[in-house]
Length: 111
Length: 117
Image (cartoon, rainbow over all chains, first blue to last red; front, side, top):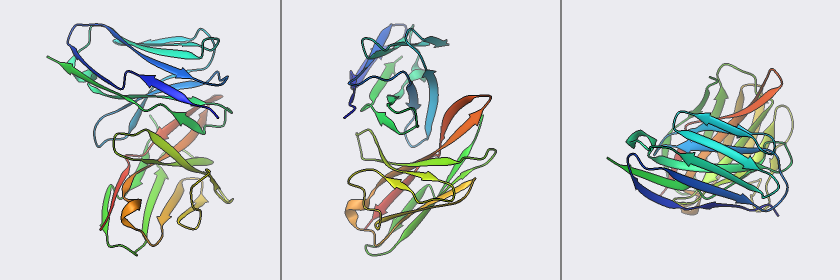
């Protein structure tokens, strides 16, 4: 059974700081997603990582995937308040879009 | 980007009634749609996979007679919570799979907050 573990589950940080959210999963997969969810709103797709060593960056967010270590990271650089949200990683074990989700990381960035 | 419309966004109903939630892909055809359930402070849980023109595939532990899914067209899937009870109160989200240029992405509806009294 595929399990996806995300940590930390809660993160409060100051603006301008850097931090990393980790997503570990238990079985082989080469398709991993990062999503953002603002309270009361839909999920927003951030990154789709499709191969070992994949690295994608947009703005202050950078995601990477190490399929051998079964680990993906979401790195936040010089955080700003607008990045406050809950971030989910999800793994597609069978490449059929039936995603297994992490528990989410609630990120609060203080001015 | 692609848009998925989910309606209603919030519904309050009495115990024993049925509630229908609609999920529409507005500017693309989605052969596959997914329904998720999210409890407070917990992750999304996949309930079922819905393919146009065929019966939905339910995840283990999800009652198919309780949560009726219909995917009548390439742009519409519906989830009906039958004889709702307070324990069915939750946040329900749909998503639709889009294939474009060999790439596939999932787009999510805005969710439906169901409260059963």
